[in-house]
Length: 254
Image (cartoon, rainbow, N blue to C red):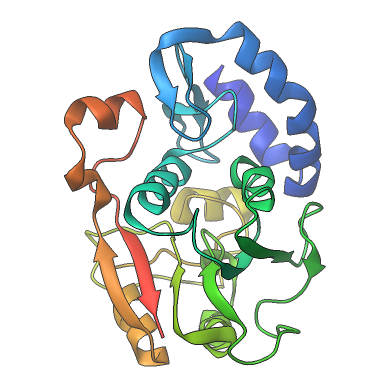
């Protein structure tokens, strides 16, 4: 199964994968029903989750019902338990909206919710993150998760995120990060897709962020809080929800 999922992830463009997943998801959820692992986003349980990964496949990671990964389930738990995201009136900007969140966030009456992306077929506004069509100081909360590693000029992207965030607002900017690496690595001379997937973890990533990611956000003007939310959960919960122990949620403030 691992090799099959890896083949399709690398062969089929992401916008097409998104459309196909709406058809496949109900079938996966039906056949994998069980009681071993739980997706906290919809509280459905399964005997196993699915493997996922463009280069190295991670077993038992992809939720059959919401198609959430570790980072999505971690973010959901953080927003639900530690913030007023689901109750306070907020204006939200969500980049590259994930299927596991999109419908649920749209249904929240307290949110003025806008999604944006350059390519995603499910985004409201087609826009370049380095040249956003939004006014200064527009949004209370910005969600921009696993986007910046795709952007060649991430400095310009971060400056745009800072510009459109309201003073007093906050954002969550998750990225794939190697906490063992002090400095971020990028090399645009590597053009072969297979080689890029091997080095960067995914063929369309342009860098591997190190611990200096937080300093770069601070250099833009953000205040940064590094949240290890798994440290507040039991090992049993971490396993049941299939989370990555020690994963950091970067929460930024303006």
